[in-house]
Image (cartoon, rainbow, N blue to C red):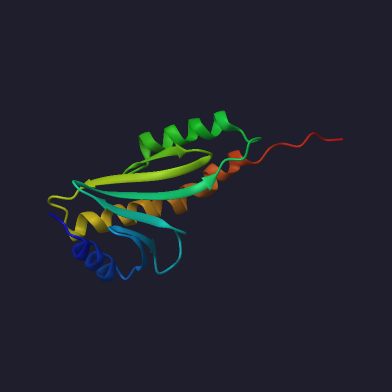
Length: 134
C-alpha cells in the first residue's frame, strides 16, 4: 500500500513543487506552471487526482461545451475524465493505492497536465457568447 511518504517521494522525484493542504492531501505545481492546482489525495484504497480547468459562465454555449467534453473523454483523455463540479469543468483520475508505483503516478500527472494544456483553448472557445451586432 502506498503511503504519504511514497506520494511525497514521487512528487520530489518528478521535480514538482507542492504544498500539503491537509493530511494525505497535496496541491501540485509543475515546474512550468502549466496547471494551476492539481490536487492529489490519498484516500485508501485509492489516490485521487483532481484539477479545476475552468469556470462555466451562465451565458456560454453549454451544449457545445458539454458535447466537446464528451468527445474529449471518449477520444483524448488518457487518464481520468472531464466532469462538472458546480459551475466548474474539472478533470479527475483515480488510481489504486495498493500497488501504485512511480511510473503510474507520473503517467497520471503528466496525462492530466497534457490534456488540460492542450484542451483548454478548445474548451474556452465555448465560453464566449456572441454579442448581437447593432
